[in-house]
Length: 514
Image: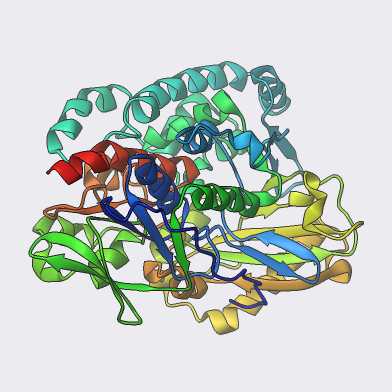
C-alpha cells in the first residue's frame, strides 16, 4: 500500500469452552468468513477464524492517517436484515452494537457537462428526477422496476441462499431464467426500458458494484435495483470498520477464537477430505470442517493439491476475472457540504471505456469514479471543519501488464485535476494525507488473483452452478464463501454465501453422532 494504513493488532476471542465439539476452521475474515463463523458457532461448532491481516474485515479494512479515517473497502449497505440475522442467531439486536443510518440520496450521479441526477428516496422522487431528463422515460422506469422485482423474487428471494452444487438445481431454474431474459445483459435490459443516454448510464452501473461490465453481465443482476428500492441504502455509523468491530465484539462474546496476522498456506487433505490447515509458520490445525473465504482461484491454485481436484474445478480456475481497482484516499482542510455521501462521477466515455478496462485491459487517459464522502453523514471520519474522501477508479486487473509504480502517481494527479475542475474546486490547495492502493496491493494484501477487485466476473456462464460451488466439488469437509462463490460479490452476496453453507453443513451434534 502507498500510505500509512494503521492496522489494529491481533485480537482473539475467548476459548469456546467446549473442546469436545467438532472444530470448524474459517480461512479469511471478510464478511463471508465472519458470517460463516457466527452461523457455525450457532450450530454448536468450536470455531477458529484466521486472517493474514492485522484487523478483521478482509477487504473492509480501516486506514487512519493524520486524523482522517477511511473505510478501505465496501461502504454501501443494502439488505440490512442479513446483518441483523447474525445477531439474532444469539438472541441479540444489531442496533445495540452499531447504528445503520438511511441515506438520501442513495447516489448522486455527476455527468461531464455538470448535470446531476439524484437516485434514491421514494419512487416518486426518482420519477421526478427522471422527468427532468426525459419525461417519456418515467413509464419506462416503472416497467423496469417491475421487471427488477421479478428478477429479485427469482434470483434473490428464491435462490440467493440455495446451493447450486447439484446441476439439477440449475436445470430447474432454466425456464424461469429464460422467461426473465437472463440471457440478456444488464445494458440490454436498461436500454429496453429507458431512452435517455444519461439515464441509461445511471441505471446500468450496478454490475460495476460487483465486478462486472453492464455490457457483459447477465441481467439477473438487474435485481440489485429492486434490492436497493426494497430496503434503501444505509451507512454504518463509524463506517464499515465500525460494523466489522460490532461483529468482532459479537464473535468474542460467543466464544469464537480469532487469530489475525497469520496466513493459511494450505488446506490439509486426507484423501479427498479436508482435515485441517497448515499456516505459513508451519503450524498445523486439525478441523472437522474447513470454510474458505479466500479468493477461490487462489484456493484451488495454491492451497488445495491439484491431484485431488476434479476436472470441473480445474476448468473454473480459468474463469474470467473482474476488473481491478485503484483507490485514492485523502483528507481536505475544508468541507464540501454540497457533495453527497456517494457520488458516481461519470467520464466522457462509457461503453468504450469499459471495453478498454475489461477486454483490452489498457489504462485509458479518461475514467469514471466513485467518490465516497463519509463526513456527509459521520463527522468522526475527519477533524472538525475537514472532510474525508476516498475515490475508487475501475482499472484493468494485473493481466493488463500496467506498471503501477509509475502509473499510480500519474493517475492520482489526473484524478485530482479532474475533481478540481468539477465537483471539488480548489482540491489541490486543501488536499492532505493522501495515499493510494492499486491492483498490486489487492494481490499482495488480500491474495487476490491478478489483483482483481471482486474475484471472478458475474457473466451468465460464471453464475449459479457455473460459479465456484459453496461445497467444494469432489471434496468433503471443505466449503466456500465470498465474492467468487455463489451468489456473488457485494455484501449481500457474500453474506448469502454463508447462508448457503449453513444449509449444507449439519449441526455439530449430528456430526458428533456420525
